[in-house]
Amino acid sequence: MPEDRRKLWADICIRLPRIHDEATVVQERDRYERLLADTRAGLDTLDGWNALTRKIDQLLRNAGTQVIRDGDSASRTPSWLRGQVRVPHQCPFDHCDRRVMAAPGNAPSCALFAARMDPEESRRDSPFE
Image (cartoon, rainbow, N blue to C red; front, side):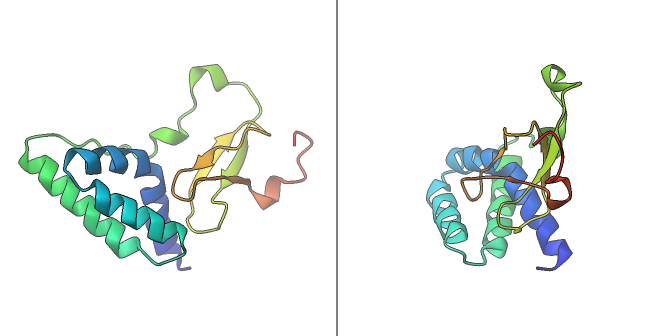
């Protein structure tokens, strides 16, 4: 998959919980659920996700609601985790280029595919795993 598409998929994956909530607010929940099911079935749905997020953004803007985009907030280290050993995890299906740091044995979840993320190959022989 081309690198630019992997970056776009990473953005969708990071934003998925927010897209879910916003789709519910703007009455696009059925469309969200269809896209999620089609993505998990292996269909190429990137254009559909981009169209949905554009529509959500437009509807929320028109409603006077400010949409905040801080897609990297999921990668910020919470204070209780600072100082602990963490390893990078990646998309379990190599679908996007999202990377999340997490404690060994505590893999974060990929919301898009409802699966645990994999430790990066380069770190698999770490003594902490």
